[in-house]
Image 1 (cartoon, one colour):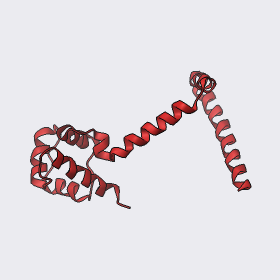
Image 2 (cartoon, rainbow, N blue to C red; image 1 turned 90 degrees about the horizontal axis):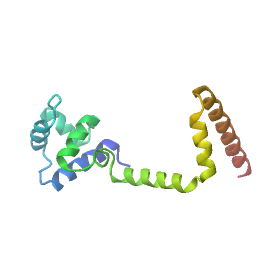
Image 3 (cartoon, rainbow, N blue to C red; image 1 turned 45 degrees about the horizontal axis):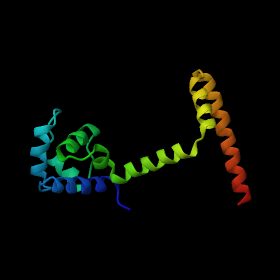
Image 4 (cartoon, rainbow, N blue to C red; image 1 turned 135 degrees about the horizontal axis):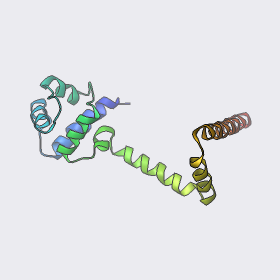
Length: 137
């Protein structure tokens, strides 16, 4: 399995090509530094991005994404991250009825110490249920 830094390097190179730029360190350094308001990055730094040795900070990913016309999430984590988040959100929305929503609303209105107690009770039930399921398997 490829490491996240190498995956980022591939996405960065692909985004540069899609935007009409050669994925070369000199091009990346020039174009990035023209757009980034923070401290400029050197040739060695951008070379390390393209080689998959390091990933830039989120602030730098935002600058890159804006320049390359992609979302920061897609550039930083890949297109699959948005699909996973959407799938989780859909499962959450579909799996919860009005009774559960009513309970969640009441839970959120409780003071923090009481929410902590309720949370611990729920987690204790979940652990007991998971342990009972393992015993039957």
